[in-house]
Amino acid sequence: SLLIFVIVIVLSFSSALYCNDLPEMRCPDPDWYEFGDFCYKPFTDQKTWHAARTSCRKLGADLVSLLSLKEQITSDMWIGLNDLEIQGYQWSDGSFVSHTNWGYGEPNNHEGREDCVEMVTTNNGSSWWNDLNCDAHQDWICMIPKGKNLCVLL
Image (cartoon, rainbow, N blue to C red; front, side, top):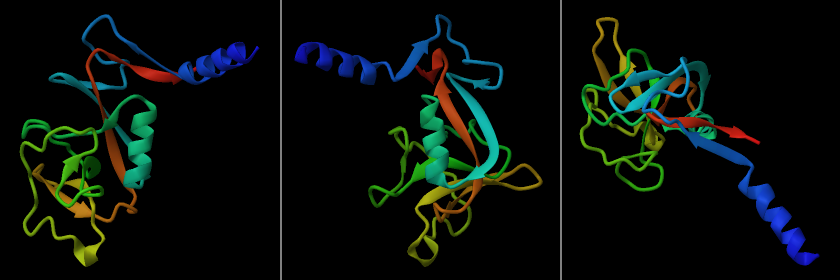
């Protein structure tokens, strides 16, 4: 009976989150925008950086990692870049920081409390990165590889 109890517990935990890869390399649903090898979904319900990252991860995604200058955002939003765990910036999904797009004088770690990064976009369409306090509320954008389906709780 102990073995059955252990099997039931293992099955309960292993089936709590289900992620199914798509048979084709496409975005999981029409709300996601395709660009290159990834799909993106912007959200306008402003959250802290941590809450935004948690929301993305609940979908099986992560905050966006801007891996090239071609991937830029058209409004002010949280991106996955941060220096929370180590001094020096890294992407929340572990991607290598291959380029930066800091604004003039950034990152400045104002008052020693700016560990997260937002993409700032001006009215003329130019954009740059700004380090910001992680507790600020911003729009945010998730990124998921094409062909990966959204995760669902069973």
